[in-house]
Image (cartoon, rainbow, N blue to C red; front, side, top):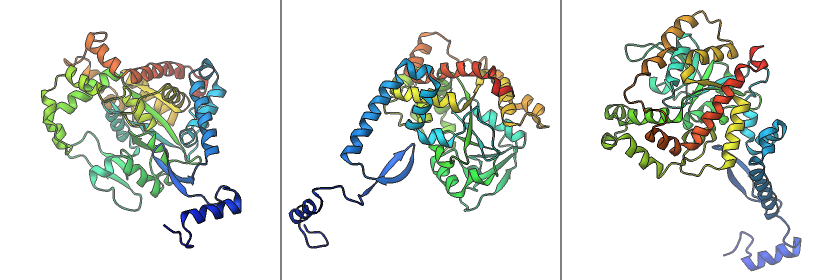
Length: 380
């Protein structure tokens, strides 16, 4: 084989050795590098760079497991920045001054009463970027508009929305291309894929994160029972009649063979759910949550909504009281659900162990909930 200059491989290597003694090529090939779902082009790594990067990675893995990482905010923040620059730079710190260029983004975890929260804010007249555009057929245009969905018995409340679907990864990239964060059209955005949603934001036009969390056992059990209903699956275009033959224990035994024990953690870090969760992943997830998240709990929905409203400046909305009565109390209706699993039972403990990383993150979030209630910056 010869190159375009007519040289064969031996001749080319001899020339390179003569000219530069195997010096690095000035314009090396470019390769794709994936960072939380986003692709950027960078020069191909040399052996020297790889060695430096490897040493840095090993040092980071050792550091996040040390007490210093847990007790020192300065050290932890600097390593958070180096380990996940997109998360650190494109999402606003919780205690940083609020800027009109920042867009509130709700991390919607399935079966955690996020739909109730979204209905609550639609009731208040806020404009959302979520999945409404896809449901209403407005997700293909190359310009951003605000639309209104009028309920005709098929939904709970009329809704104002921007015509981008931030619930999925393809829609997130479309939102990036059309400049959703820069447009100022949305009052909030909603997504399940928070780690991937960094693509929508920039260090100037940041996202401000809030979320509503449910205990992982309750969340997963609720998810199972909804998936088990064949009619619901057919409505979504997916049919899984075999689920009707599974009892809840058999389902989780089967899932345990394939899942990494961190469904929520994987969503947060845009990680494949079949890849093992590491100590470094957990340290990063906790640091991300501590620095960037306003925490809400489904078992404390009215208090969570109040906290969100005060933080984002929605508390004085004239429709707030009426909307809270309608959508802020839905949690109470499911308290006596006959399908609930008793806390501390053998089945509860089995599921909790199956999603041990999510349970660990949830327990940490509960601590943050308490801390945020008494933090001085929140009540300024």
